[in-house]
Each structure stands twice: as C-alpha cells, then as structure tokens.
Image 1 (cartoon, one colour):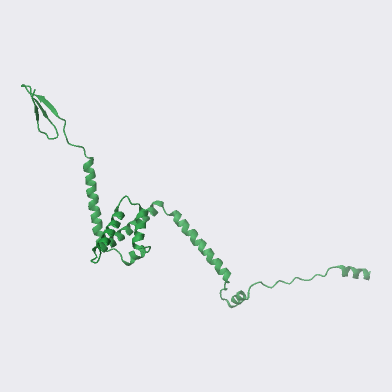
Image 2 (image 1 turned 60 degrees about the vertical axis):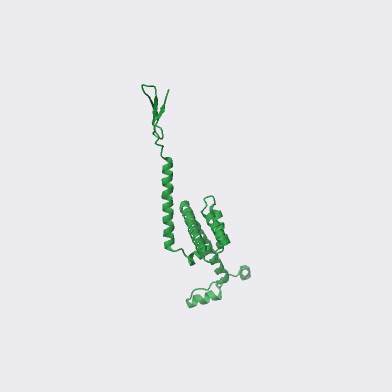
Length: 207
C-alpha cells in the first residue's frame, strides 16, 4: 500500500504557483511614475501624435470649407481680385507721373492699364498680367504700400458718376419716340395740307 501510494504521489505533477510577470514599462516611464513627473514620449510616439494632429486639423478645415456657402467664396475671390486691380492701377498711375519715365515706359504702362480695364480680358488673363508686371508677391506689396484712402474715395466717385451716366443713356435709348401721326386736310380750292410730321410744319400739295 505504501509503495502504491508513493507511486501515485510520484506520478502526480507538482503544482507550482505562477509568479506574476514583471511590468513591461520602460525605465523612463517607471522613473517618471515614481517621481510624479509626466511620462516622457519617445521619438516615434511624438511623430505619431504630430501626424494625428495634422490629420485632425485637415479634417476640421475641410468641414469648415464645406460649410462655407459657395456665394460667399465667390464674393471673396471677386473682392480680392478687385483689390489687386485697384492697387495695380494706382501703381501704374504713379509710374506714369514719374519724371524720369521714358516714352516707351509710358506707352507700355498705358497698354497694361487698357488691358486691365478691358471687359474683353478674362479674370485669369488680368491675374496673369499683374503677376508678370509686379511679380508673385503682389499681396505682400499691397500690405507694405497700401493705397491712400483719398485715392480710393476719388475713384469711387468716378465710378458712381460713370454708372449714373450709363444708366441715363440706357433709359434715354429705351424711351419711345414722340413723333405724331401725320394727318391730311383738303381745302375748298383743292389744295391738300399735311400736318403732324416730325418737323410739325404743314406741307401744301396743289392738285
């Protein structure tokens, strides 16, 4: 009985208590946790955080752009283009007033002004022309050399006056003519008198 018992006990696997694995935290994290200071991020973690922040910013910008009405965007582009046009025309006008300007320079400046003001030139063509004349930093120059308010007020008055004249001309061309219908009368002696023509002068016809 004792041998059987010993055999049975010997065949049974020995039960050992599993010990907990040591924490896998890096020394830097352990040190910061023990000292109460924030954990230091590795280079890879910082890079991933930056990429995540960039993606989030791009997503928010895209949502804001989608929420902006198309009409407002178009109006902003048109107003931006008009500000460039005003600045370019002002600089060209100053160049024409310069004492040392040659005849060729003045003629070239006038040609640029005509093209910028021409209704036949498209917006893309005008933008390209301003880029050729003033370079690619026109917005920077606009901040460094702004247009005087007096000049803008003067140009606005000129535009208003031109618009008033154009409207008056259009209204005059639409109004009907005031010519009356001619009428004829025959007297006792057989003569015919016609009145009501444009000249309003009677015409006498003899038989």
